[in-house]
Image (cartoon, rainbow, N blue to C red; front, side, top):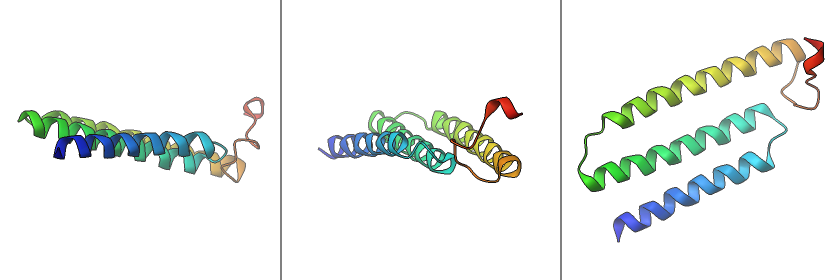
Length: 98
């Protein structure tokens, strides 16, 4: 019963992250935050799955390392976009200008 509730919570977190990603796609910061929320929900799902089957947690550490690298890359793209264009709107970003 406990595992079922955690799976439903993780699924709800994942779907709400996807809904926010679709609805707030105009700002880069909002999309990055929703992607990090999706990664956290997947981490929670993996952790509960490994805890249920009594596996080792090494893969979750590798998953966290890759998610931190993804977050750092997204923030660097955000900083470079704000420095060059002044904001994080996708409407003002023109690929042909660069």
